[in-house]
Image (cartoon, rainbow over all chains, first blue to last red; front, side, top):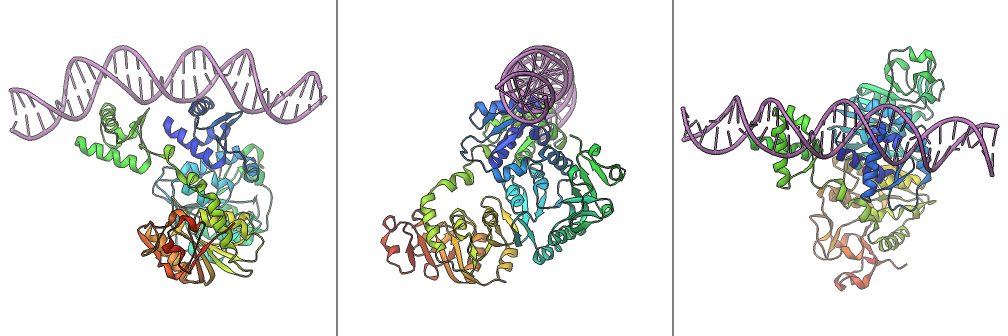
Length: 249
Length: 249
DNA sequence: ACGGTTTTTGACCAATTGAGCGTTTATTTT
DNA sequence: AAAATAAACGCTCAATTGGTCAAAAACCGT
């Protein structure tokens, strides 16, 4: 990773989120704390961002949006390392499906510069992808207000037109018997179709999701690869499976 | 491998990826580090790329691009009053089409609480609409990176399924002979279809857009209602038309 | 084979990086 | 509010990597 490349990605990040955390950057950019600190220091000297304790923030933004901000900070490091592990599954030339959600959103910066085409149901993810210059196709349909995901019959119909090399799916709960589940049946249906259209599919779920059950099943445990962050925090009934990966960064 | 051939491939690479690494180039071009360095040095001297430690990068990337940020701050007050005038055209129960763009985005807060369903091609507008709790349907298709608008055949096909009470369209230029125009033919096509599917259609254009011409026509002047902000700043050949409205707030 | 160019090689210097460590700042506990 | 704990900071340093330069070798069309 080139120094300048790193700095640009930091700037893109900061442009989009308002703030960046050093801890996250070390994961996203695969660099040491020292390096990130140096980068931030130099960028701050250039007046391109403002250095603050633990990270940096946009230079002129007077008001921060606490709404998304807060949600994004929950389990960020876990999500970032899961995303990094997932992004390593992506190859140049791939056509991939990216689910809506904050975990999958973390993958977006890691796709920058790669020659991939991404199909997504997440409105915000689509916007992010466009910012990062990734070729993006958005599915059409009704927007679910809370998660800003496209759902419904129209979306699943469009999905059927595509074949993906891999699908990256977020899940609310992972249970040993009931598999991967999520509260909204319509969202579950969309995810299920996406998995069906993919040669390989990955469920992204941090340790806090394990052992719970939500209403609608996305997929049984065995049919996908699960990527998570911390084996130590998960019951061994999961960790002994062979289709579960621990992200180690 | 000829020198010029090498340089050409370096430039193609950089154009495509934004950055190149010397280590990668030595492999791809089967040349030594020194050779690549010399090539890069010469190309840099010609101003065709910027040399950085470990490689090179595209000359004018993210760093100095004006981006959406600047465009959004320009003419905000004008856009706000235009949007307010446009929003008054919306009735409860309507199904409306909302174009992508910063002007139409200003309408979103004004739709809050109304019983309308909005169909949009703008990714950011869709996100905004969802935030404001407006029933939203997003068209699917390829995302145009710069404007984050959905374009292409898939989008126009979906549009054909809907009939709108009104369509609110942004335009780059309004000319007395050439009508409303915009630079991208694909975007123009989408807007045109939306207008065709609407009982009433409104072009939102602030005073600075008048008198110019862009490449692709959206609609002739007579076929829509034009909403603008300041009659005083516009040539009288426009203001005497009967399908132009001045937003006064 | 010859003159000019391109490429390789090796030596030396500069830049970048990641880890360690004592200090400062923030957060939690008492 | 004060103390204890945990993060984050800035600093130095060794190691790696990239950069420059010049001489030698290989290449090319004539």
